[in-house]
Image 1 (tube, rainbow, N blue to C red):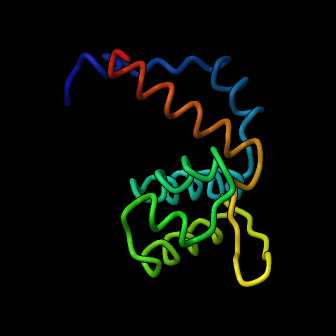
Image 2: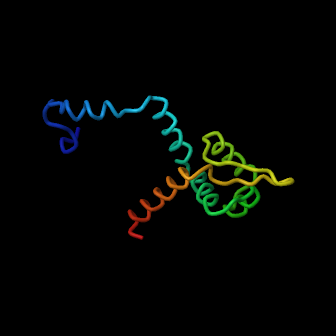
Image 3: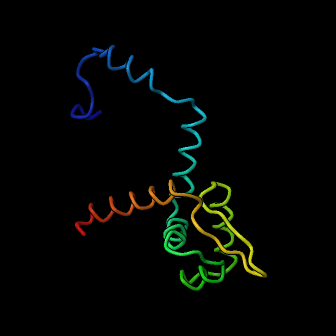
Length: 121
């Protein structure tokens, strides 16, 4: 183990631990939140979310934009729907998608800003 990243002793800062313990959330909340990152953690799904955050699009629009098959995009949209990251509405024969809510928008924005900052953009 790299000692730069570990405590050298076994002292527990009990007051700090007690304060944080009182603020911990139920395990289900952590599980649901981590599912968000698992679903969003795929590059293709992230690209789809980024596009849908800019404008409501149908599967054919996304397939054309991302140079993918309609089937491949549909598969990724199913995962995004399961993760509750996108919503859809039907208009005639078309189904249009958009990001589910402002929380998804804020997470996308934060991730992109962080990546741009790290890249020196």
